[in-house]
Image (cartoon, rainbow over all chains, first blue to last red; front, side):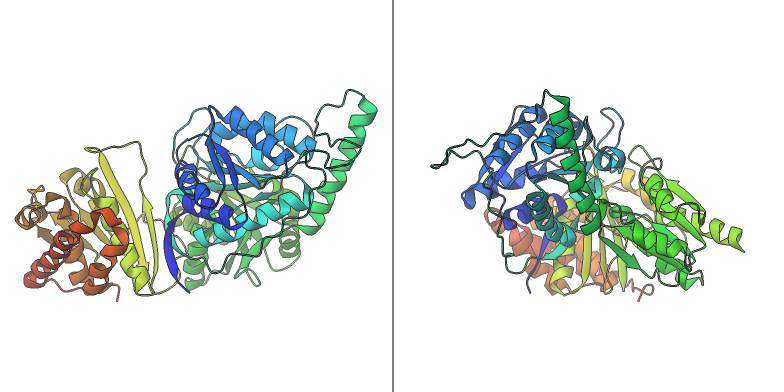
Length: 354
Length: 188
């Protein structure tokens, strides 16, 4: 199969087109600007619409409108821009509309910098905006996986009528790797009888809304959302295990850091230290099962590695539930964890176990 | 075989494109490749670098903190990255702009007057590809033929008139390295 060299940001764009996305609203911000740049050229080629909004706030509300009309629609930004979108994402979650939001994370907090980061984990998986809501969150670790997961993101969004977030760090957006595109996937979005596209002869109008004045009514909405999230937690946990079966030290890392961790697993195994990797592919729902199983099995210690001050760490601790020690190593502010640093941490943990 | 190459120089020297050419040529040979730019807010005249990994095995970490080869196109790049080169690694430096020898005693070193070679070809902008030609000759990580052919993929159609100059640059770089007699002896 033909391989093409593609930048991560471009892969998000091409993946979306292959998933049947025909509408994109966004606003440029480094390090994700190649994504809207790519779609500005690509979407018109397939009869789609690309629009650069006047701000991130406008962009997410255009997404809200297009989603209400039943379109497969996407926006993308980087950390500060995603913060600006949070109000709109909360509205879309309450209105139960499908859309995909890509966050190519950069160093924060504040305006921060444009260097790679994973510091928006809490924001992505714990809600982000106001109110009790959740987004399925996917974290690809290679350019090929971007192509594959963006299709899943649109499918999950339609299946659950919920925004889905896909996160990567600045490196994943900027780097190039070969990808095999293969034939375009079969895309069959489910019927959307709730879409506000005219009554089409029906007596009643479709209404898209996130305003519920009566608490009794809003509680019902909340209960419905919670039941939906429960189903998401039951059905959508995804993860990758690498040499984890007999590992006594389990590294837990997502996205680009999981690539660094893989190199550490290999080098430590060469040095006779049984290390493995569990890589969450979905950050919400968090894949607690393999961690719980390892904690009750061969694992003697866990090491969470992130490009933040310890955010996924909390979910790992919940999954391990005190059965084994959970260590942490992270860099912040756009600094990237090196293989040597993680190796040092693993050696320390291994010495402590003896 | 694993080559982790750091290409560094001024913005505008063609560093990123040359890295892309190496990546593309490697991919066309069926190798695993990755390309990562430094994407700081630099423009022409600022520093620019990219890291390219070419390997016959899947690449776990595409980040290059300890390059097997440094291609330094200017003095600031040599000064910044010389110490990071893996022991036994290779330092190729642009002797047109760097008037001192690298200080590393445990690396193989070759200076190429890339700017002069590029000017003799008639296009200063192909200097980075002179260095790439030298790298290919010394490392044998990919064949020169693959790089020559990949130019049509890396250069957009409206730049295809530049292909002959770039091919000449690759060939001249390879010739200079061959005549210098620097033979690769590590990482293979």
